[in-house]
Amino acid sequence: IGGIYGFPIHGEVATKAAIDLAGQVVTPETRTFEPDKAIEEYQEAWLKEHIPGFLGPKLYSKTCLYTMPRDRTFIIDTLPDLPQVLLCVGAGHAFKFASLFGQILSELAIDGQTPHDISSLTLNRPAITDPNYDSPVLNQIVARGY
Image (cartoon, rainbow, N blue to C red):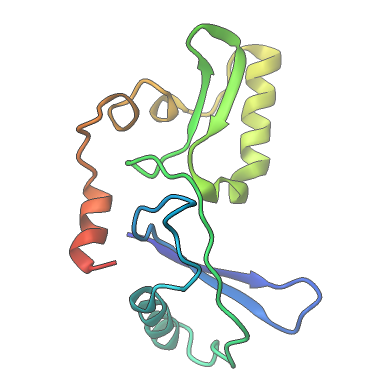
């Protein structure tokens, strides 16, 4: 459903640990800044089980908003009416893949193609085009109570 990840915090003697798991669907107007306790408990239990000794004192927790297509997959495509405009959007965790996406976009801009298979990342897929798309991933999240 989602992966735990972490990395050092620049300038601090600390590590960021987070879970790549969509929470409740909110808007900037309806969100709160309170972390979801169920998700925090899941993450802490996972870390204790899989990386004993990782957890130190909790310095702070904060939440973030990002866009997420129903299939949790990025969009790399051209605009339908403007094929000269490249698009790379749709999932807030994309920054972790910035170097690969930069390579793909530069290949598309210069060569018109890329050796990477991006066929599943187009705008023309059910999660984007079908308003009734049923997401197995989001259904699992709801079933878990997150």
